[in-house]
Image: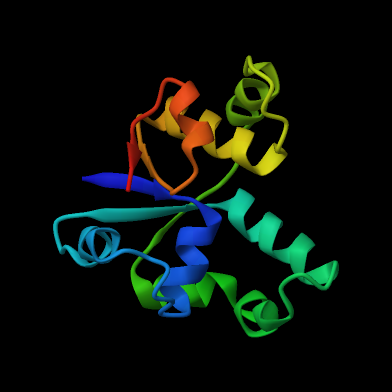
Length: 128
């Protein structure tokens, strides 16, 4: 299975945070699964770092691609199609990072791993 991870899932995985459930850990660790990380997550982490909300992200941001390579996670760039889809999504949810993840999951046929139930209102499969 190939799936996209929400930003908090990525951060919890990298920090070995107990907030990430064992079931999610098993899916990420499974050798037959491919974990995909959106460029939107890098963008979100960088913004939150800049705002002082994620001071511990300095090391991650210094070599984001290296961290993904080390974990064998696949990066997913943001395309024009993704941007248009994100902008045209219906509903009241306005978070630009979440909207991009929804659009990418739809466009790429990916499930999205997240604890955020807001994703359930869109036509994507949510893993948790």
